Length: 130
Image 1: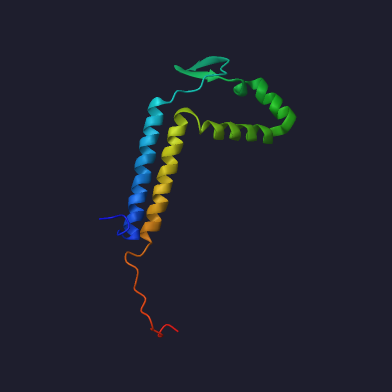
Image 2: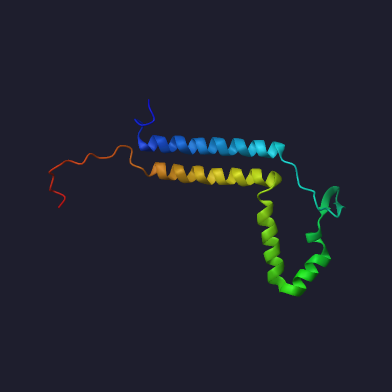
């Protein structure tokens, strides 16, 4: 069966499956090959056997100075900015891509579900609609 001969509903379901397959496989590849960034680490802190890196942004002095100059809003904006930037690096990128591809797949499947299977033929000269 050729692509042009397929009904729109079937094409949309195939597109949603391709989006999910490519997105999740890309996420797996990124997760397996990604390394966590440790460029500007000041040191490490061990809490309950888990090692956490200490960056300049996590130091009490940085947070204090930021709050002193900009208030609580500046601290919250800085935390949000760092969280959003971290979504696009390392292993977090894999989860971001998996989430976005899943949402896109659900959206295209939703459109496909609400698409009529076969369009109703429009008869010429039928004035009963008017």
